[in-house]
Length: 165
Image (cartoon, rainbow, N blue to C red; front, side, top):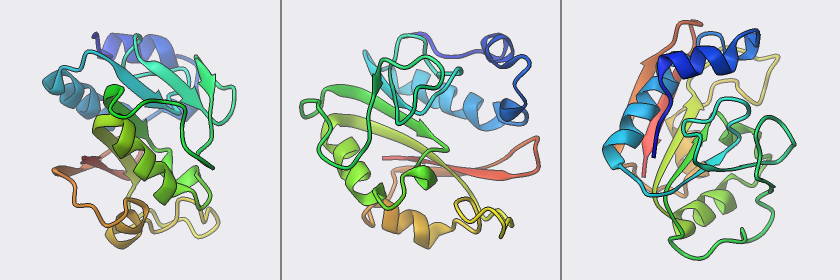
């Protein structure tokens, strides 16, 4: 599989303010994905900037390049271990109480999972992103310990944390 380069990122995100300051953590995930060397990949919520062009892309809304609309209110329509890698960047906080179910499903259908979260943002007027910390992430991931985690200092001044399961 081919994973995103800085040139791809710049091309995909040109003119979209949403993506400003995000290359730091996306590049780290691209590097991780290359090291894992999956034959297939499921990306959740990638919008118009997937980490891999060849990935199977789902989202809860029709935004960007989506193969299927999908929510996590029940079992996802994939067989056990159907994906070598699943990537969900800056998605978990938007799952509105379905995080634990979603995580169980990702672990069921994927051999490796990479998640990123906004980490310790001070934004009380934006409660979805406000003060997400280790305890909150642990609840969302069913208290499973990641194999790896890394805090990324991003160009936009906000930290993200990457977990690999």
